Image (tube, rainbow, N blue to C red; front, top):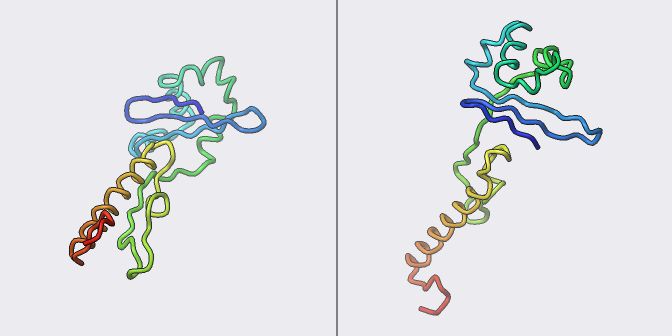
Length: 137
């Protein structure tokens, strides 16, 4: 994985088995919408990613065509509500959070889920007059 971070946007390169890379540009729609022509795209990459643009785009000779051919979509997070089904099932961790891996939030969300589950179980045990530590009561 190679990441080119730039202010409000970034490009990542994911390695392929054939030793090539698949690159993805992540940026706000208003910036992306400003790249309307092949010249706009070339100028943008020359300014912000000069290593990619070097030698007249030798490393990415089909950059402009690829840029306009591939679809754009948004990055998003999905929150589940409710995150349980009756008293039979709960969603925790990756099953209840949809974030892209490079946000680096999967483990954080899982930890938050564990803390919240512990709070709910403690409250439920207390409401039932039970000791949540299993020490009797």
